[in-house]
Amino acid sequence: MGFSSEDEQFMRQAIRLSREGTGYTEPNPLVGALLVHNGNILSGGFHSRFGALHAEREALKAENIPPGTTLYVTLEPCLHFGKTPPCRDIIVEKQVSRVVVATVDPNPLVSGKGLDALREAGVRVEVGCLAKEAQWVNRHYLTYMSLRRPHLVIKAGVSADGKLSDAKQDSRWVTSEELRRVANDFRGEFSAILVGSGTILADDPLLTIRSNQWPEKRFWRIVLDGRARLSSSHFLQTASEQYPILWVVSSNSNSSVPIRQPHLTILSLQEGLQGGIDLNALMSALHEIGIASVIIEGGPTIFDSFLNAGLVDEMVLFTAPSLLGGQKALTIYPSGRSVDNPIQLKDYSVLELTSGWIVCGRL
Image 1 (cartoon, rainbow, N blue to C red):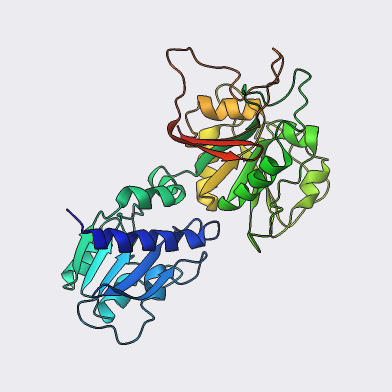
Image 2 (image 1 turned 45 degrees about the vertical axis):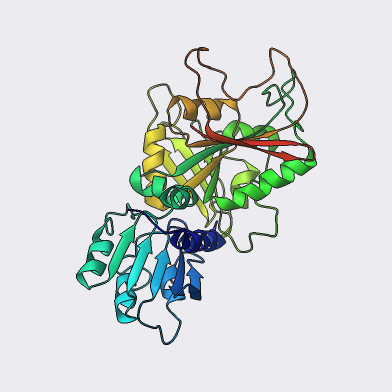
């Protein structure tokens, strides 16, 4: 179906609105909505956080909606009761004439049913306006719903020759303070961060978000610790309501901890075929918990395991303009691939900062 330039203009504004909820809506989607009549915007809305009003209901707070009004919305309106009533009901109640939708919701409770219900109520519905743009903004949610697992992104600080450390395996600091600050702020877009126990034992990181741009954000800290090496670690005692910890151990290990914390969850999973935690079982468990996106910041062992399992959706490399070299220096993908079968970054982009570059791409 073809859409006019005006349709695309308004949908683009709705997509921009949807981004306002970034970091706070998961496992629900990012959604923006714009109410338009005769080329004039009457109101707009976005889903601001999990449990808050949906974007359609925010936009439809407007009074005296005239006949012939169009609602632009970035995701199919829902038909079921969740944290809020169905959006289909308010659209029909307000007598919106036309609804333009960017993309269908893969949630089995919706998945085309919302569109059908609107059409049955006499609303003109058109689907697919700027679909790719809307899907990209909502990629965490779409992965979570379609694949039944979190959207996974490897994030690493590297030298220009791809090293995580120097030849002595010292990784502090490969990148500049500027790159580290931006990298830390990037965490806010996700539901959780994941590292291996080796990172905790070596660096004792907090794994929190230092930026004040993410007030009151709840952020899971996941540690893979197959052998339960962290049973007496100070890190496990830092669990809090804002920064809960998910301690993942092998079902064969001794997972007792000396101090029980109210926001510390112990997840015992079977081992995988190659040893360590069964990553597919982990993905199912995280989906069940409601963790829709994970930023992976572990060392090369963790990176390697997720890459070899084919579970990584994106890679973001904070790259310093330096060469470290060294055969013993740590790299992102130690097991590697042959030159005729590499892992390719798709739709990649490069953002230049004062002290380096941010290289992003899909896998």
